[in-house]
Amino acid sequence: MWATSIYTAVNPQHVAQRAALKEHIYAIEKAPGPRVASGIAPQLKANLFESKFDFFQTDHATVQALHTWCSGAVTEVVRHRNSQVWDPSHQFQLQVVESWFHVTRAGGYHELHNHPNCSWCGIYYIEIGDSTGGDGSNVFLDPRAGAHNYLDAGASYLNQFTQIDFEPEDGKLIIFPSYLLHAAKPYSGAKDRIVVAFNCAVRKVD
Image (cartoon, rainbow, N blue to C red; front, side, top):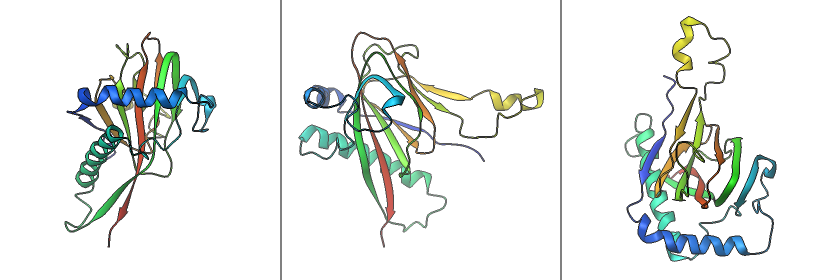
């Protein structure tokens, strides 16, 4: 009854695309401007570069290939997750309304937050760097706000999974509903950790 669906997919073209994506990302990072170029909640972030929220709005061929693959994956998720409530003839349009990247270095993290004004979100790992054993992983919290207000022996089952950690993997995409609170754990690696994130809105087509 209270289940929340989180999906993962692995990009089969990741190895072929990675170098071009990294080159493009570093070129954006080197341009003059603030470390949190998006201007959104800089106090929640440390030791990372966050781009503006328009990463997919470009004619860069490899970025557009990633955009197409990510949009296709989320489209499958939306169709699957709504199959029990939508009419079979239901038509919809998925739009990536925001997209950005993080380059995280040693000591970097992103505190707990969720994403408003969208229904589905994605995090794509371009380069996990030295992320192992939870270092720099993304963590998602139990969305049942009142489930842990009181715990005794009879509520032991509630406390089994208060959060879920996803081990980073190059080329992996995590797709999750926008209401989920999540964070990027502190990263201590020597290599850069690079991810692309995006938010999607879904609109009915008449």
